[in-house]
Amino acid sequence: MNRQHMGVIVGGILFLVVAMGISRFALTPLLPFMRIDENLSFAQGGWLASSNYVGYFIGALGAAFIYRAKKNFLLLNVVINVTSIILMGFIDSYIIWIVLRLIMGLTSGFIFVLTSSIVMDYLATHLLTRWSGYVFSGIGFGIALSGLLVPFFEARVQWQGSWIGLGMISAIFLVTTVFLWRRLTVPNQASLPKGEQTSIWYGFMPWLIIAYGLEGLGYIITGTFLVDIIYNIEALRSFAGYSWVVVGIAAIPSAPVWMHLMSRFSTISMMALAYAMQIIGILLPVLSQTAWSVLLSAFLYGFTFVGLVTMSTGYARQLYPQQSGYVVSMLTTFYALGQIVGPVIAGRLETYYVTFKAPLLFAGGTVTVALIILIIGYYYSKKKSVPIAQELYN
Image (cartoon, rainbow, N blue to C red; front, top):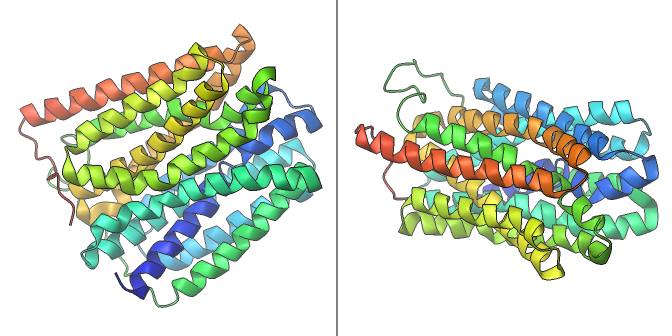
């Protein structure tokens, strides 16, 4: 691991901090303040989230067709993403917020897929695949950063200033990555001919994609409304901001930890363990509304959702090493599809039942179905003698 390799990893981490931790998830700690100051309903908050995920879906799908000038196209999307973050603080219009969140989602989809595939391909070329999990720690860093900075900014410059401040920090990360990646060259790729040997729609991969899509639907409900839910429990209001910091802190080491476990144990068993832990984390606030239960819920949530992103994308690349961009794109597309409908369903369930327990029960049930599909798909594919990737990382 030399300075060049470290620079590529750190640059990838910073891009995921911007695209995932800030552009996407900063809305979670900011949403309670925006809802109060702008008199937004729970459902309107859900639409702000869902517009972002619609864009993310389009971007993730579109990234599958980017074969040339990947690096330049990625940098352009980061510039647009950072600009949109800053504009959220300058513009006071719900309709325009919806549009900006759509743009932020669109660019985030491109950023996540292209950054992941560029860094994973680079590390694989240099026989450093075991380090690929570290790039996904950027999601946790971004969540922790937004969770720590939002209360600080909001107390001084309100939620508008929080968006601007986070946007300025994102701009610094962009400039830093441009410098770190100045010697990185990303070769153009050619699309592979589709057939049974190259198509990802055979064997275990479709099962993995469906399970991952359901994970996207279930996890995002907690990811969107966790802070808002805790904030609206009078006795726990003081813990609302801290809960998101706990999510980020738990998410930071989760990617390398789960990648290490993947190299020592069966990948599917580790993914099943992560799903089970996440289900417990989602349902904890339903069963108990104490400070310890909600903070443990936040920890389990942060530790598992980034781990599942890391393991799912990493394992998919093992299955199809020559199509890293395409398989990551397809996984992320179905993940984003689940995220589009998740917050809307959550808002409707909360409105109908007038309790946060309803959307959390729905989220927990959805992730449980994802776990069942993952296990059934794996053993069905194994029984059919469909090749499964070796449980080994370089």
